[in-house]
Image (cartoon, rainbow, N blue to C red; front, side, top):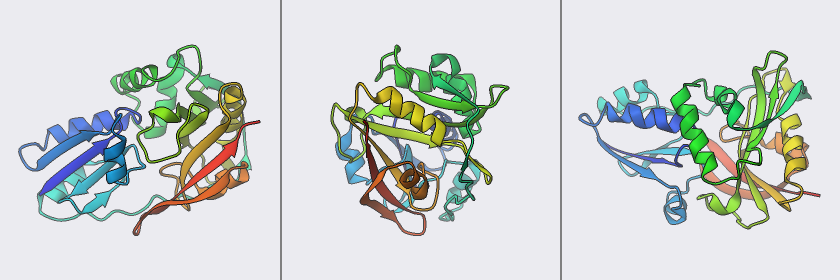
Length: 251
């Protein structure tokens, strides 16, 4: 079976761990890897709006982080089942400590993936440094009193984003808006902090969100609550997600 793995560099730290996992299966599957960094044409051709995309036999698309069980199923000649991640989300906002996201606390942000190994954090750090000034934060974090991650938001200048989205020097793209639980919304606080940070350099924030799930970002109701305007549907992935583009003017 043929497997194509498309990924946006180390925008998500899991991309590196997934590439390593694929190396273990090189003798069992026909594997091709494609970094879409700077390749807007390829990203558009593949209708790619996630930090990674798996395509089996040029037709079956998958979006969840790659796992060993998935690859073992493929090695057995079967197409794995994939279900969207639809956790119940709390809407009561809770902000404890807001901190700018910098190289010094980047590994805390990597906790959102469940894998905070130092080498993965370093790969993410190098990725961010190649596009943004070290004098400015990459986003903002919401931490508890012990310094553990509650929620966070990250951005990228839209001109460097390979996805098929509006781009401009004054448009900031939200790459990651993460973490909440069934009781609280931990994301609104850092989102407001980032908006204040971007005020001098950008006129607009844009983001891609699923209607109901939180990967990538989301759900849609969260951004509408925070003053974003729904610009319409970008992509529909059958039985997985309906992605919308949203925008907000920065004033």
